[in-house]
Image 1: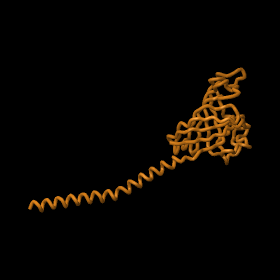
Image 2: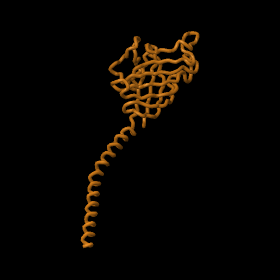
Image 3: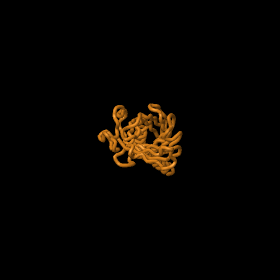
Image 4: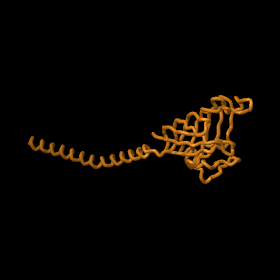
Length: 206
């Protein structure tokens, strides 16, 4: 009698073990597929596309504090400002102005996004002849809706033409959420609205 009971218990344990293994075989592929999807999504960002733009500042949107200013009324060291502009394809502004004298985009069909810049004058303010003349936060708004997909950068900007400087990517929204990295930019010159034309290269990563 004892042997019969022992055999039934053993068979029950074998049955339970078989059921557990069967469940693992069913569940594991689902979990693996889920993990693969997550890793695939992560890897899509790990091979990030380098973003490159030409910026045409709308000079009519450049606004600065009344103080401090120099004797000509131009921003001096410590003067705060904000300005806006348009994002064009990389290389587009080589032979183009980008902004009309009234501040509207010269090529609206080529505009890729919105650009907002705020910061402070450093060096000798607007009279700086070489080196950094402002330290800024730049906001690259790349989605159809405001704030949908964006990247922000921080750092110096040079007054020297065609001289590159590195800036930090400090964050973003949408598909660029929690983005870090760096960017380079250089001043191309001034456009018809008296705003700057700038070329930037963004290297975002998570």
